Image 1 (cartoon, each protein chain N blue to C red):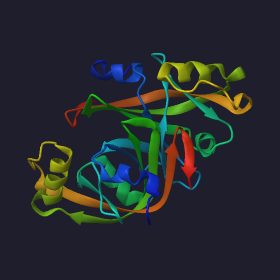
Image 2: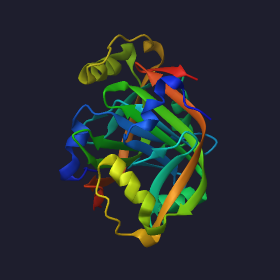
Image 3: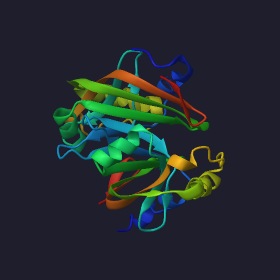
Length: 134
Length: 134
């Protein structure tokens, strides 16, 4: 499933996404996250030891929103579903993602690092504060 | 309830927040929003006619995350609860908020405009990508 062409750049640039997940008690959580988009799925680096990991396993539906720092009324929401949580041997995915974002790429917790794979189910694109798609 | 002193500025500046809500089917939604903080509650301008309004009424628990555009590893998550949805006669709150953000302050939908009031229940503050509070 492809994002609206007008907003595809927001998934390709190294921007900070805000990921909404649902906690086991049914309340929402919002976390700023690095992400990677390969044209089919979103990937997030995470660990098995944190709250969001429990959220993903209890409720696989998530939503990611991104706004364009150069035009803050231009934004994209991706709704999707966690379809896999893969090991990240040696923290390789973490390191690659950190480098893409210009962050600290030392992996201190490789033993618990995972890659969370989210397949989009819908997109909402906003320009000038108005929904343009769908 | 006060935010950690180190991160209070993120609520005072005219930054864009990402608001996580839960839809009636239990899935999360993430929306970029203007907000106003008076030291006690967050206020959002919204309308009675949109999806998020239905979310607020079905599940009053929400989470707002904000990252500092000048230091993107510095962020604040506010979890809270919708405690009131007030009318916004003439769109006065909308207009004031739009002006604070330097946005278009013409009110086209004053008849359905509301002010969503959220009282914080907890804060999570992050600096350098690490949780510093609580």
